[in-house]
Length: 57
Image (cartoon, rainbow, N blue to C red; front, side):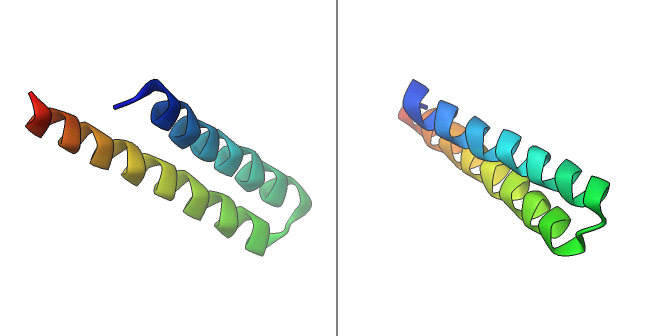
């Protein structure tokens, strides 16, 4: 996994955490759900990159 891809995926995950917390603090269920989706997307992208890396070796 390239460092740039890893950083982008982590940024998406961290941004999702921030959205989720903000939604939780304000009672905005839509923002909270959006944050959870962003976290999941970041995690899935990281997992996909790890699988690709495993097959490269």
